[in-house]
Image 1 (cartoon, rainbow, N blue to C red):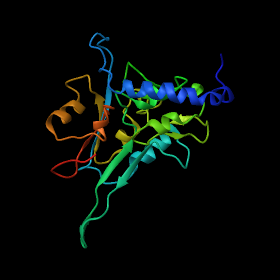
Image 2 (image 1 turned 135 degrees about the vertical axis):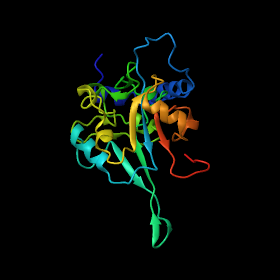
Image 3 (image 1 turned 180 degrees about the horizontal axis):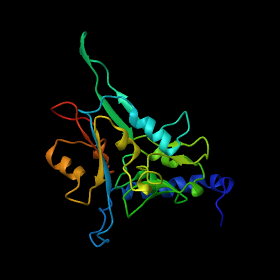
Image 4 (image 1 turned 60 degrees about the vertical axis):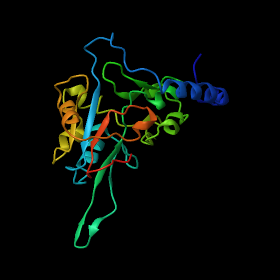
Length: 229
């Protein structure tokens, strides 16, 4: 039966109960099975906060390559409060975008299958033609990085330029445009990849990893000592 907005919204009470429960139980689901084809990739990214200068070239490139409408953004670079005292003041920068979780709550709560994880790449993406605009995925995302595209009215987010640069055999636009090489992208299933080399040799952290979402966006912290997330 076709799921129209009217039919769907008429049954939201039941859907909230069933999908919510499923989401809670699936957060502790096991990792990808070792029996899956070896050709499957698991794309991840590293943001080196010690190299980021907050120039926002990445956000501009993302907007241009992926035709992101004004008023919304697939990624943001957030500046900290001033560090130090005048005249020796500096700032720290961190990236806010989709984490491409191994255990994605946004996928588990979607009642139409619009939100999904591509098992061949690990990328979390959206079947826009299936999105009914319920907003469950926006509410379920603990990172609050999803939004409604004002042009096509479907849920939207970073997808590592899956339909643009990646499809053309290039790196994501943000990675290509970064002047300080603060972003690294690659296959976490490949032990020789640059992302794995950085994870192996540098201190890294992941935002809200304690929730069990297993994010694939890693960060090299700006400060030494304990990292809060």
